[in-house]
Length: 224
Length: 102
Image: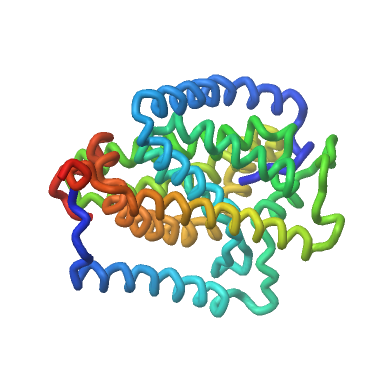
């Protein structure tokens, strides 16, 4: 989902910066407020941030013969809500753009929007929706991770299709072309990310149960 | 605070999930088409774009060779893993409030 440096037209870069900035500022305020009101949340916020850093650095092979990486933003979105992940995701992308040339500074706004805004918000929506059905505690997290991953890549496809519409089929044809390349590789990885999310959430349910209970993600006696 | 030991079925589930991830990883490698290079989808899509970049990265590790780039990715994962492990360790070792009061 990392659109490389200089690959979006300058106008698009500016527009995506403008679209992402309010979410990131809101996210920064949310992190500061959460840390001040509940200092014990700091460890958990840092943990979901480190989890995103690890997962977004893993290039995993897929049966299609290509490789891609998970996003890891779904877990933090489920635990703390999407605003927190807007800031964490931005920091991860900035790190990768500056030190790994993965993504870029000019495309940072677009990458932030797909990775740190759209993915986490879609994950949060899926989390709330599945949770309303009262399934086992692990299932909403699994769905959130899966949806965050796929949404990130679908939004990237849309961003590229907007910048480079197909000469004959326009936006729709270009979107289908890019999304097909991503989806074939990404669907198995998204499923694997969902499974990994369940494992990590199961661990957090033991190690950080008070925080998760306070955040309304677990009931006192619930086992994951 | 409930920090009971793992029940047998929970341990079996965790081990089965980890095994599924490892098997899935191996299957992806084995079932991939012959001659697959496992190039990143970001690069694949980037090559499809009908445009040249109008800006260059400030620092491009690929210019020092693929090993340097792969190494930096590994360092990122390693740093994240160490930090995550440290934080999870801190979370696990906290004294439960009810135990601290006793």
